[in-house]
Length: 93
Length: 190
Ligand SMILES: [Cu+2]
Image (tube, rainbow over all chains, first blue to last red; front, side, top):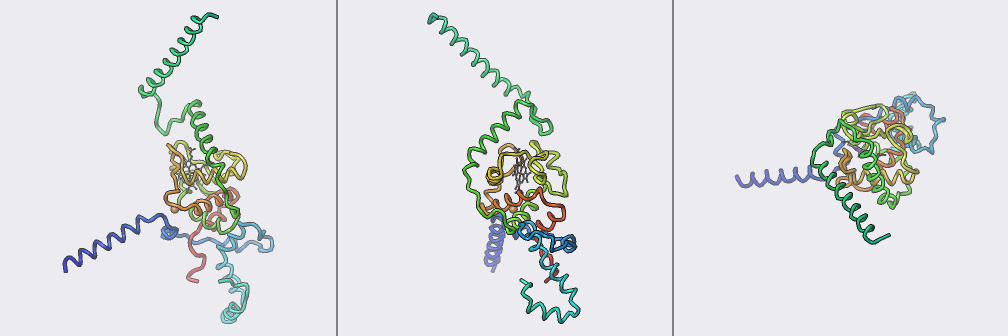
Protein backbone atom coordinates (compact mmCIF):
# COMPACT_ATOMS: atom_id res chain seq x y z
CA UNK A 1 0.00 0.00 0.00
CA UNK A 2 2.64 2.44 1.10
CA UNK A 3 5.00 1.51 -1.72
CA UNK A 4 2.15 1.93 -4.17
CA UNK A 5 1.61 5.51 -3.04
CA UNK A 6 5.32 6.24 -3.13
CA UNK A 7 5.59 4.74 -6.61
CA UNK A 8 2.64 6.82 -7.72
CA UNK A 9 4.10 10.04 -6.31
CA UNK A 10 7.44 9.27 -7.90
CA UNK A 11 5.86 8.60 -11.28
CA UNK A 12 3.81 11.75 -11.01
CA UNK A 13 6.72 13.97 -10.06
CA UNK A 14 8.83 12.43 -12.84
CA UNK A 15 6.07 13.16 -15.32
CA UNK A 16 5.75 16.74 -14.11
CA UNK A 17 9.51 17.16 -14.21
CA UNK A 18 9.92 15.85 -17.75
CA UNK A 19 6.99 17.94 -18.93
CA UNK A 20 8.48 21.10 -17.51
CA UNK A 21 11.91 20.25 -18.94
CA UNK A 22 10.56 19.91 -22.45
CA UNK A 23 11.67 22.56 -24.87
CA UNK A 24 9.48 25.49 -25.31
CA UNK A 25 6.16 24.68 -26.85
CA UNK A 26 3.97 27.52 -28.17
CA UNK A 27 1.21 26.21 -25.87
CA UNK A 28 3.34 27.17 -22.91
CA UNK A 29 2.70 30.78 -23.74
CA UNK A 30 -1.07 30.30 -23.83
CA UNK A 31 -1.34 31.01 -20.10
CA UNK A 32 -1.27 34.75 -20.61
CA UNK A 33 -2.78 34.68 -24.09
CA UNK A 34 -4.18 38.03 -25.06
CA UNK A 35 -7.13 38.38 -27.42
CA UNK A 36 -6.62 40.42 -30.58
CA UNK A 37 -8.27 43.82 -30.32
CA UNK A 38 -9.98 44.08 -33.68
CA UNK A 39 -11.92 47.30 -33.14
CA UNK A 40 -9.59 49.30 -35.38
CA UNK A 41 -9.83 46.59 -38.02
CA UNK A 42 -13.62 46.63 -38.03
CA UNK A 43 -13.71 50.33 -38.76
CA UNK A 44 -11.41 49.96 -41.76
CA UNK A 45 -12.76 50.12 -45.27
CA UNK A 46 -12.23 46.59 -46.54
CA UNK A 47 -12.32 47.64 -50.18
CA UNK A 48 -9.28 49.84 -49.62
CA UNK A 49 -7.13 47.13 -48.05
CA UNK A 50 -4.36 45.51 -50.05
CA UNK A 51 -5.19 41.81 -49.91
CA UNK A 52 -1.79 40.83 -51.35
CA UNK A 53 -0.01 42.31 -48.35
CA UNK A 54 0.95 39.59 -45.83
CA UNK A 55 0.37 42.01 -42.93
CA UNK A 56 -3.19 42.66 -44.10
CA UNK A 57 -3.75 38.94 -44.65
CA UNK A 58 -2.51 38.21 -41.13
CA UNK A 59 -4.78 40.93 -39.70
CA UNK A 60 -7.75 39.41 -41.55
CA UNK A 61 -6.94 35.96 -40.21
CA UNK A 62 -6.72 37.21 -36.62
CA UNK A 63 -9.93 39.22 -36.89
CA UNK A 64 -11.93 36.79 -39.01
CA UNK A 65 -14.22 35.81 -36.15
CA UNK A 66 -15.06 39.30 -34.93
CA UNK A 67 -15.59 40.50 -38.47
CA UNK A 68 -17.92 37.62 -39.18
CA UNK A 69 -19.84 38.38 -36.01
CA UNK A 70 -20.16 41.89 -37.25
CA UNK A 71 -21.74 40.69 -40.45
CA UNK A 72 -24.11 38.45 -38.52
CA UNK A 73 -25.29 41.36 -36.44
CA UNK A 74 -26.29 43.20 -39.56
CA UNK A 75 -28.54 40.34 -40.61
CA UNK A 76 -32.12 41.11 -39.62
CA UNK A 77 -33.01 37.84 -38.01
CA UNK A 78 -30.83 35.78 -35.65
CA UNK A 79 -32.22 32.49 -36.93
CA UNK A 80 -31.93 33.58 -40.49
CA UNK A 81 -28.31 34.54 -40.08
CA UNK A 82 -27.71 31.09 -38.62
CA UNK A 83 -29.07 29.31 -41.69
CA UNK A 84 -27.35 31.87 -43.86
CA UNK A 85 -24.08 30.92 -42.24
CA UNK A 86 -24.52 27.31 -43.27
CA UNK A 87 -24.91 27.99 -46.95
CA UNK A 88 -22.57 30.93 -47.23
CA UNK A 89 -19.23 30.22 -48.85
CA UNK A 90 -17.71 33.27 -47.18
CA UNK A 91 -17.70 31.58 -43.83
CA UNK A 92 -14.55 29.58 -43.54
CA UNK A 93 -14.74 28.30 -39.98
CA UNK B 1 74.02 47.82 -44.83
CA UNK B 2 76.02 45.65 -42.50
CA UNK B 3 74.61 42.45 -41.03
CA UNK B 4 75.31 43.79 -37.53
CA UNK B 5 73.09 46.83 -37.98
CA UNK B 6 70.24 44.63 -39.30
CA UNK B 7 70.54 42.31 -36.33
CA UNK B 8 70.36 45.15 -33.82
CA UNK B 9 67.25 46.47 -35.54
CA UNK B 10 65.56 43.07 -35.26
CA UNK B 11 66.54 43.03 -31.60
CA UNK B 12 64.97 46.41 -30.89
CA UNK B 13 61.77 45.30 -32.65
CA UNK B 14 61.65 42.22 -30.47
CA UNK B 15 62.14 44.33 -27.36
CA UNK B 16 59.34 46.68 -28.40
CA UNK B 17 56.92 43.81 -28.95
CA UNK B 18 57.97 42.29 -25.63
CA UNK B 19 57.29 45.53 -23.77
CA UNK B 20 53.87 45.84 -25.47
CA UNK B 21 52.88 42.32 -24.41
CA UNK B 22 54.08 42.77 -20.85
CA UNK B 23 52.36 46.17 -20.69
CA UNK B 24 49.09 44.71 -22.02
CA UNK B 25 49.11 41.84 -19.53
CA UNK B 26 50.00 44.26 -16.73
CA UNK B 27 47.02 46.39 -17.73
CA UNK B 28 44.69 43.38 -17.60
CA UNK B 29 45.96 42.48 -14.13
CA UNK B 30 45.84 46.07 -12.88
CA UNK B 31 42.02 45.96 -12.90
CA UNK B 32 41.87 49.48 -14.23
CA UNK B 33 39.38 48.80 -17.03
CA UNK B 34 35.80 49.63 -15.88
CA UNK B 35 33.64 46.50 -16.18
CA UNK B 36 30.28 47.92 -15.06
CA UNK B 37 27.44 47.93 -17.62
CA UNK B 38 26.75 51.56 -16.72
CA UNK B 39 30.09 52.81 -18.09
CA UNK B 40 30.31 52.62 -21.91
CA UNK B 41 33.40 51.22 -23.65
CA UNK B 42 35.95 53.70 -24.93
CA UNK B 43 35.99 54.27 -28.68
CA UNK B 44 38.89 51.89 -29.34
CA UNK B 45 37.44 48.95 -27.39
CA UNK B 46 34.01 49.60 -28.92
CA UNK B 47 35.43 49.57 -32.43
CA UNK B 48 37.40 46.41 -31.70
CA UNK B 49 34.43 44.50 -30.29
CA UNK B 50 32.04 45.67 -32.98
CA UNK B 51 34.45 44.69 -35.75
CA UNK B 52 35.06 41.32 -34.11
CA UNK B 53 31.29 40.69 -33.82
CA UNK B 54 30.27 41.79 -37.31
CA UNK B 55 33.16 40.08 -39.12
CA UNK B 56 32.53 36.85 -37.25
CA UNK B 57 28.78 36.89 -37.94
CA UNK B 58 29.28 37.79 -41.59
CA UNK B 59 31.63 34.88 -42.16
CA UNK B 60 29.13 32.27 -40.95
CA UNK B 61 25.75 33.93 -41.63
CA UNK B 62 26.25 34.79 -45.31
CA UNK B 63 26.21 31.03 -46.12
CA UNK B 64 22.78 30.45 -44.55
CA UNK B 65 19.98 29.59 -46.96
CA UNK B 66 16.87 31.72 -46.47
CA UNK B 67 13.51 29.91 -47.03
CA UNK B 68 11.64 31.28 -50.04
CA UNK B 69 8.29 31.61 -48.26
CA UNK B 70 9.39 34.30 -45.81
CA UNK B 71 6.67 36.74 -46.81
CA UNK B 72 3.58 34.91 -45.60
CA UNK B 73 0.88 35.77 -43.07
CA UNK B 74 1.32 32.39 -41.36
CA UNK B 75 4.95 33.20 -40.54
CA UNK B 76 4.00 36.68 -39.34
CA UNK B 77 1.39 35.29 -36.95
CA UNK B 78 3.58 32.55 -35.49
CA UNK B 79 6.62 34.81 -35.27
CA UNK B 80 4.64 37.71 -33.86
CA UNK B 81 3.28 35.77 -30.92
CA UNK B 82 6.73 34.40 -30.10
CA UNK B 83 8.37 37.81 -30.45
CA UNK B 84 5.88 39.39 -28.09
CA UNK B 85 6.41 36.67 -25.48
CA UNK B 86 10.17 36.35 -25.62
CA UNK B 87 11.77 39.41 -27.20
CA UNK B 88 9.66 42.53 -26.68
CA UNK B 89 10.94 43.01 -23.12
CA UNK B 90 14.37 43.75 -24.60
CA UNK B 91 13.70 44.75 -28.22
CA UNK B 92 10.53 46.77 -27.63
CA UNK B 93 7.40 47.21 -29.75
CA UNK B 94 5.56 50.02 -31.56
CA UNK B 95 3.87 51.09 -28.32
CA UNK B 96 6.89 50.45 -26.08
CA UNK B 97 9.76 52.91 -26.10
CA UNK B 98 11.97 51.65 -23.29
CA UNK B 99 12.24 48.92 -20.66
CA UNK B 100 14.44 47.97 -17.72
CA UNK B 101 16.56 46.00 -20.18
CA UNK B 102 17.08 48.78 -22.71
CA UNK B 103 18.05 51.13 -19.90
CA UNK B 104 20.26 48.71 -18.00
CA UNK B 105 21.94 46.37 -20.47
CA UNK B 106 25.23 47.20 -22.15
CA UNK B 107 25.36 46.79 -25.09
CA UNK B 108 21.76 47.97 -25.08
CA UNK B 109 19.33 45.80 -27.10
CA UNK B 110 18.45 47.65 -30.31
CA UNK B 111 14.84 48.74 -30.76
CA UNK B 112 13.70 46.33 -33.48
CA UNK B 113 10.44 48.21 -34.03
CA UNK B 114 12.39 51.05 -35.63
CA UNK B 115 13.29 50.95 -39.32
CA UNK B 116 16.82 49.83 -40.08
CA UNK B 117 18.03 53.30 -40.94
CA UNK B 118 16.57 54.82 -37.77
CA UNK B 119 18.49 55.16 -34.54
CA UNK B 120 19.18 52.01 -32.57
CA UNK B 121 18.98 49.42 -35.31
CA UNK B 122 21.90 49.89 -37.63
CA UNK B 123 21.73 48.98 -41.28
CA UNK B 124 23.75 45.87 -42.02
CA UNK B 125 23.77 45.28 -45.75
CA UNK B 126 20.93 44.26 -48.03
CA UNK B 127 17.63 42.55 -47.21
CA UNK B 128 18.96 39.04 -47.84
CA UNK B 129 21.97 39.44 -45.58
CA UNK B 130 19.84 41.17 -42.98
CA UNK B 131 17.64 38.05 -42.76
CA UNK B 132 20.62 35.68 -42.68
CA UNK B 133 22.23 37.79 -39.99
CA UNK B 134 19.07 37.98 -37.88
CA UNK B 135 18.57 34.22 -38.14
CA UNK B 136 22.12 33.51 -37.03
CA UNK B 137 21.97 35.97 -34.14
CA UNK B 138 18.64 34.62 -32.85
CA UNK B 139 19.77 31.01 -33.13
CA UNK B 140 23.24 31.43 -31.62
CA UNK B 141 22.99 34.57 -29.49
CA UNK B 142 25.90 36.98 -28.96
CA UNK B 143 28.66 36.32 -26.44
CA UNK B 144 29.08 38.69 -23.50
CA UNK B 145 25.90 40.58 -24.30
CA UNK B 146 22.32 40.14 -23.10
CA UNK B 147 21.34 38.39 -26.33
CA UNK B 148 20.61 34.71 -25.57
CA UNK B 149 20.89 31.82 -28.04
CA UNK B 150 17.37 30.63 -28.80
CA UNK B 151 18.51 27.65 -30.90
CA UNK B 152 18.73 25.18 -28.01
CA UNK B 153 15.04 25.61 -27.18
CA UNK B 154 13.47 26.55 -30.55
CA UNK B 155 13.63 24.85 -33.95
CA UNK B 156 14.74 26.61 -37.13
CA UNK B 157 11.20 27.11 -38.41
CA UNK B 158 10.21 29.13 -35.33
CA UNK B 159 13.37 31.20 -35.65
CA UNK B 160 12.63 31.94 -39.32
CA UNK B 161 9.09 32.91 -38.28
CA UNK B 162 10.57 35.50 -35.93
CA UNK B 163 12.98 36.71 -38.62
CA UNK B 164 9.95 37.24 -40.90
CA UNK B 165 8.12 39.11 -38.17
CA UNK B 166 11.10 41.34 -37.34
CA UNK B 167 11.32 42.19 -41.04
CA UNK B 168 7.78 43.61 -40.99
CA UNK B 169 7.87 44.97 -37.45
CA UNK B 170 8.98 48.54 -38.31
CA UNK B 171 5.92 48.88 -40.57
CA UNK B 172 3.40 47.98 -37.86
CA UNK B 173 1.23 50.45 -35.97
CA UNK B 174 0.60 49.78 -32.27
CA UNK B 175 -2.89 48.44 -33.15
CA UNK B 176 -1.56 46.12 -35.85
CA UNK B 177 1.14 44.91 -33.48
CA UNK B 178 -1.46 44.04 -30.85
CA UNK B 179 -3.60 42.06 -33.31
CA UNK B 180 -0.69 40.19 -34.92
CA UNK B 181 0.96 39.18 -31.64
CA UNK B 182 -2.16 38.12 -29.74
CA UNK B 183 -2.22 34.38 -29.22
CA UNK B 184 -5.78 34.18 -27.98
CA UNK B 185 -8.87 33.72 -30.11
CA UNK B 186 -10.66 36.92 -31.07
CA UNK B 187 -14.07 35.28 -30.65
CA UNK B 188 -15.62 34.66 -27.27
CA UNK B 189 -16.20 30.90 -27.17
CA UNK B 190 -17.12 30.93 -30.82
CU1 LIG C 1 9.67 30.74 -26.65
